[in-house]
Length: 65
Image 1: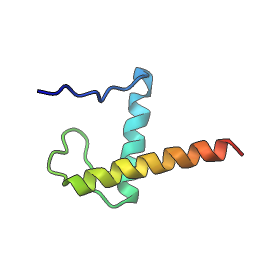
Image 2: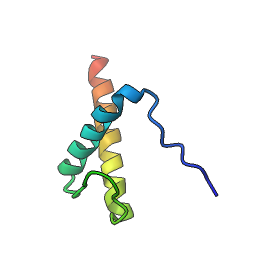
Image 3: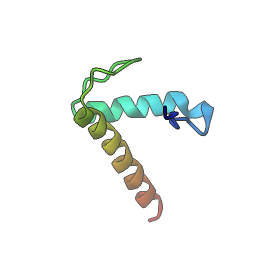
Image 4: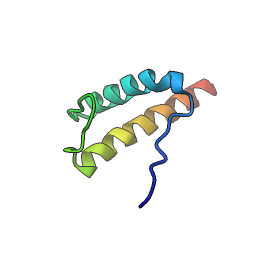
């Protein structure tokens, strides 16, 4: 069985990452709740992750200006 590699590299950032995830879920219209979200479809979960990546790339590009 495969082990999960979903670890936060900076433990102090955990709360900020959770807020960021909730913000992105809200932006794409996914009803994300605290704790377990196993009832989400792959499409919904992927849209949240995709939005997070999109915003991180946008932030990085803006910092290069």
